[in-house]
Length: 112
Image (cartoon, rainbow, N blue to C red):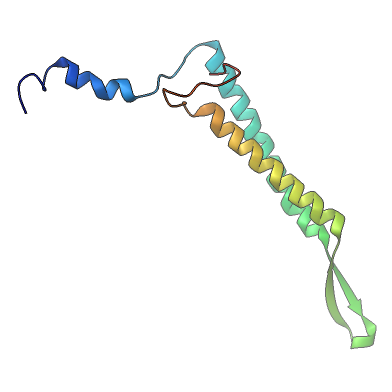
């Protein structure tokens, strides 16, 4: 390695590879949105588990000497899957909003 390679230009290259993080009201708004999205995600996950619990219906059969079988209610299962899917999409959107973009990429809507 020569003295020319260890100059100030060589030291600034790693700094240029880091993405710039914007600050100000736009960044604050993005953080507020992420916090709200994470609260909605928590509610949807709890709701999905409760809906799944309502989907399982135990039925006691007198013909089989009191044996209990379970039945799944399709509408509650569908609601549970829908809530989990929306929670996953909101979680991905929250990650997209809060994580910095690589230097070469730009966002269409100009968000921070």
